[in-house]
Figure 1 (cartoon, helix red, strand yellow):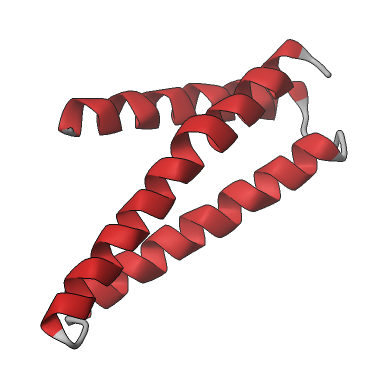
Figure 2 (tube, rainbow, N blue to C red; figure 1 turned 180 degrees about the horizontal axis):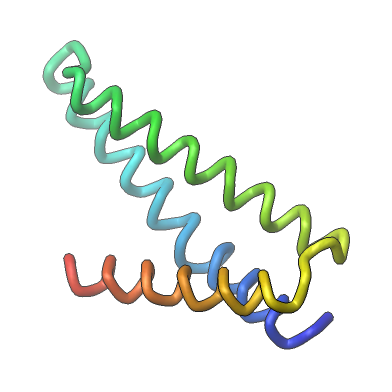
Amino acid sequence: MKECYKELKELIEDVIMPDIEDHIDDIFDEISSQKRASKEQQEQINEMQELRDELTSILEDINNNELEDDECKELLEEMTEMSQYEEEEK
């Protein structure tokens, strides 16, 4: 597996996906305590689920060796920035 593929896969699986799952869990905890979801919470859940689906698709492309080198580098850069931004927000 190419180095870019490996780095991107590890970043998605080890950092970004767990953060997304944690965020979704937090929203569901809020909803549970309120007994119903607000429009904003529904939108957040939908956004997080769409992002999770996109990342799952990227992982499938990596595993099937269907990701171009340029695309891999671009995605790695974007995902790295995203994870750094998330760390700053904590």
